[in-house]
Image (cartoon, rainbow, N blue to C red; front, side, top):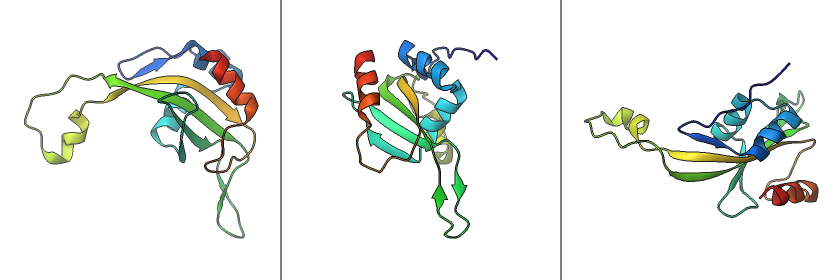
Length: 136
């Protein structure tokens, strides 16, 4: 099955590196966006002014303890760019103000699957650091 290559939009820019990694790891555009929108963990990225976010590949609960467990993680590294939406100059109720607020454009740099569980605050594995630094 051929996957569609992600296209740049008003809010998202995709690098050729992330497109290659998405094909390699079998990640869809929607899955990568989902990790960015609802990360379980957020860390500082290895490149300057970047953010790395993680979601478990598949989440389960331990029957005995009730704790969330997983065996693999999906990571995405991105960078926030300048405002991309025009400021809307209309009278908006406060409850809807967030919808019309200017958003920042997201430049997605890399995405990968990690076959294990990383510890919070612990750096990325050397192999992944080398791959990303080559791409930058």
